[in-house]
Length: 599
Image (spheres, rainbow, N blue to C red):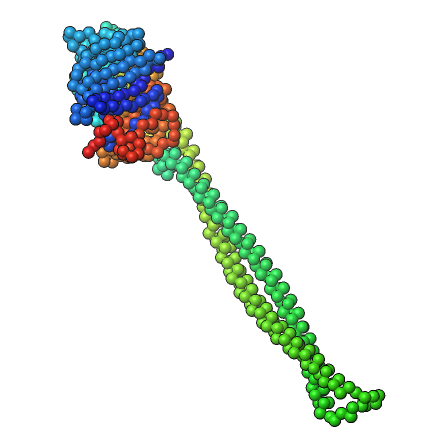
């Protein structure tokens, strides 16, 4: 199959040139306000035949050019500002080069719409019904392009994002969808059922089904209340948070036990030191007693010699009568005095050492008392605080896990509601003979079922809590949740988000069912509301999931998403063409139109 996609957009003027390149799949264009993001959308729309100028002539740009890749061939479109002609340069066999008009004219057989229809695989001219009296008009890209190029000023539309604002254009739009989807033959018209009878029958059955839906909604709310009024993802997040707390607490307990063990080891070390010092003190006590005996002995000897020296010396030994040396006694006394002095110093040193040891012993005893107090405090914290907290966290986690068991019951309710919504779809879309043309009645049940299925699927992927209670309402041609329209159910905060989901559901339906498939979609500011100061209640997780869905659905058609950089969610990296304008001349690209700023 030939791949067709918007490849390159350029805007030119005298000494002016701006270019932006696209690729197949997802393209995200972001930046702050007033950098020309919406101008890109307007330029592409201008080349489909829009009468609105995409930018002012004061920018000194005057021509819009678009290059479209068709397999290995290229179709180029060019339109000057203020002109209703579009120049086409094509090497694609089915499309002729030349000058085309921006809209149908009675004297012109070549509107630019024909080029686009041929790119979509349609051979013009094709006629569709434009009102209930079966009046016909030529199929034009301008008839249905509003569902493929979604402008920023349409994103917060409270009515259907798909239907044209001008009521007289709705029938032609719906007929165009029928042709694009199913190549509808409008000559086959059936007679419709009596409106009064059909309404009575429909209302009775619908009221019964809605009563059941409300009943089961109350049951779902009860189950959700059991889930602590949190979504399943919130419960899992709570379990993960509590598990992390439990893990951290276990680490604290482990560390506290290590501290306790360390304190016990320190106490053992202190006891060892106390024993060693006690042993030393006993030894030094014995040594002091020995020193005291030595001191007394030496003192006695010295005193004895001193006393003897006072007695007159005959110079003869009284024992052997031999002559005694005159200096012998004096030498002995000197030796004893020297020994005594040395001993005194030893005693003094020993006393000082004993004193130091006693101080160390006292300090160690104080240290032991302090360590024992610390050990008691740590043990008390472990046994009376940490371990009870661990038990509480474990109990709470188990409690949350029991809540999750309600998930299967909620899913069963969602399946029942989905079946009932399908019954309503079948009821509302019964075919009946008609005397007037009502295009909605021509859509087969597979369209309504498909839109409801796609809306629920996308909302589910986007973590929308009530996805199972949503459906595509044929009357409003818009999303309905819990039997209410989007503005009544959720207010303005969700409008752009839900409108985006509806557009994506139609895109997915075309991918699955359509005979003719427009190959691109442009959505300008899907998160509109934040950008304009509107309170937006869309959870960050839902916004991230929406952009992840953009990426996952890239194979359905080329998708160009415009979003303000300050509202762009922090999504994970995925495969896309990411284009960012910075509104700075020093960092990246200022904006789309080179040389133009908002000053």
